[in-house]
Length: 188
Image 1 (cartoon, rainbow, N blue to C red):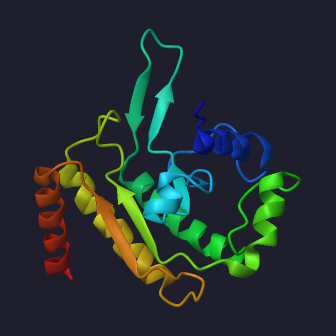
Image 2: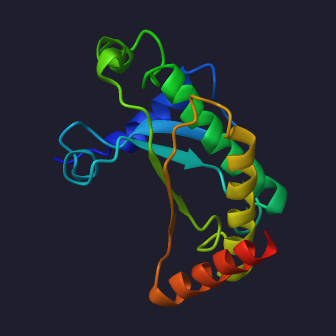
């Protein structure tokens, strides 16, 4: 029997943690661990956390479920929320679970072994089922948002990122992302 520990933890975060709850605003982030301690993400790949970012608004109750992708301002908020979460996790030494849970107690007991977050992977927000405009627009906006966040956090010792990755679905997407990043570099 397999269980979705990430989904279970996400549910626990939004139902038992006073920092979250429903509805979660677009551009907001809710952290979970990257599965149980023996999961492929944690053990083989080395991921420790998944930052769940709200990138679409779901209109329920209409004839058909409608997804509205986040706009450029909300992309900026989403990137800022991820950076805020990195600072918060580093400050709290990896303790993310609601107090009173077994996960909280385990994280608290392991806080002395916590290593600051050094890398993050950003997917192309709302480019899939979210229905946003092309990946070229998202790449450029995401790049600008990351650039702005780096400027905002450059003097914060708890902001420990050394590597930022953008996740592409295909070689064509990768080429578009690289072109957008080169355009950003030219503007600076």
